[in-house]
Image 1 (cartoon, rainbow, N blue to C red):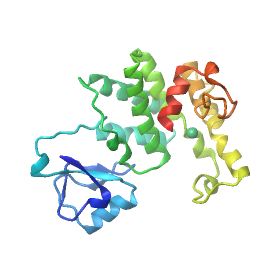
Image 2 (image 1 turned 135 degrees about the vertical axis):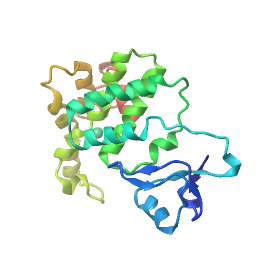
Image 3 (image 1 turned 45 degrees about the vertical axis):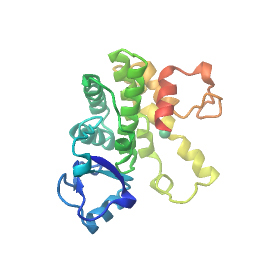
Length: 236
Ligand SMILES: [Fe+2]
């Protein structure tokens, strides 16, 4: 299979993989030829490209980072703001990634899903896990980090939709409201005894920058845990 930019996708090409929307519904099916309307649908869902199968690339295999089924489960738990399910899915994501013998990630795969907060959160979770594996974190830490990633933007669901979904630039006042989502996410979990404190602080401070210019508290690098830094980088 090979990667084709969506601008160069043409009717008659055969997708190498089935693609799903954020609800887990099938958008295009592997090996079923693309047509004008399926290509249009991929555009509308914000896909930047697609893997296609052809003779030239017949012997090249590209794996999903996590299985489509697990991705759908992850999307569902974020969409439903189900924190118990997020804890469970975080464990499964870490297990799936640790089971891989090699971590050859094609990051285009990470960007080829529609861009809702929940799809983004699963992508951030996968990136966090991969960074954590690279840093030789323990499985417990990886699970905590992935949990923080799945939960970090749940507070956005509590931002008025007219601000959250505003297509134009936010006014300074609206931006101040938007910024409260980090604290709102933290408040959803702060009283839970089963979530480690470093997961809570990572969620709370995921928009802090190492130069102290972030929010909500303007923490500098020395005040930030490794969880906060990884989550911030993966999110950006
Ligand atoms: Fe955020």
